[in-house]
Image (cartoon, rainbow, N blue to C red; front, side):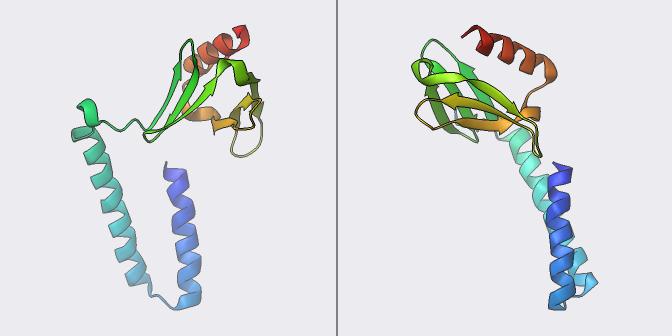
Length: 127
């Protein structure tokens, strides 16, 4: 997550150089960004529970198909349309679940731990 915010900060600094924003103002904006991140993290730990819990990322495998969850938004790929998976080795590294209906599911290779990826790949290869 820190690497992703690095790009926001880098772009912000470059933007500041060309717009005349003073470094003091950039520090203030940086602290506002940090406070926002901390508050969002606290909200996730304290209030994100129970029935109203937001699932950041998840993968459900059942008899009907594969469901990928991205911050509560679910995308389902039925097994009859599943054509396999591939690993895209570029930046960012991706796992692509291919569909015959051209609505492929793509997610980061590093979204799950190596043990979870191994279980996922073993399960998908058996399909």
